[in-house]
Length: 359
Image (cartoon, rainbow, N blue to C red; front, side):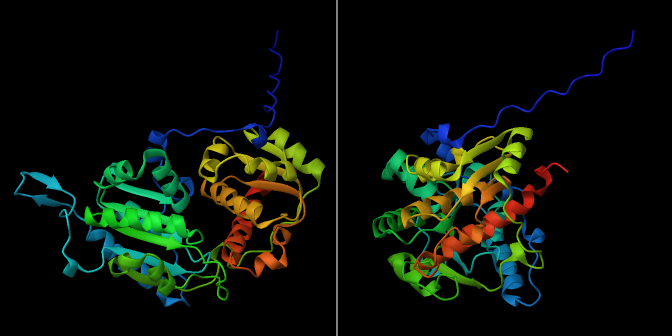
């Protein structure tokens, strides 16, 4: 007797992000200070400079040289190895680089490539966003954070937030202590409130905000257009609610949430935990996407978009297209760079989700 054909197992029910309230231990925060999955395999030679923007190729050269110069030295007076001297002399020159450019020019790619290229074990270098760094200080305390990161060769800070003066002073003080301990620094940053124009943050303003650290940074301007949409077709149109729901149920490890409910839930979870909120997802599905009601909600959505993008999680939606998420007042305000970056990244993730739709 022939065997009956196997019946395929149905995909598990989609999860709801609104049902998740992650808690993240301090030890995990330290262990996860590495480039996120999207940037785990990037290197300087995988960065494709725009031939019309010579500053991009120059950035690769400068950063490659910077990484090569971060070799360890021997402290013969103490009979053990040290990562740089305890207090680098002032004449040593800049011990940090600041990547200055608009969204989509590959700053995070280059920052992660610098982390990978630096000749040190993973536990001797750290990579994280500004939000993750401030949360680490909150979890460990200032002195313990200095001790934890003070033995590192390199600290990379992506999306350096300059919107909150208190946090800026806190991190500036932390970085000063780390520089004294011999840690090299690299950073990208976001726009200050009220800064309009190119969608980029001026290096002069960054130097002013970090006060006494400015002499330690070499600004490296990177010009260009958003690579995520260079030569690509227009973003896919939103789907129907039925299409999104069907795709969520057919995709293993997908989430399915009503967009307004998700926005409300984000207010109950600290942004530093949004990475944990999306853990294990292979797709994120949102129905009834509509305008974001206020700036606080919009800024939380920006962080979620960043974490989805970092983790390469495709996004399927019904409702309004992404370029209508944020109102004109938001897109013309001081946080405009963040909102345009979120639109850019969500659009890229929507393209990635095309393969989830049934033929």
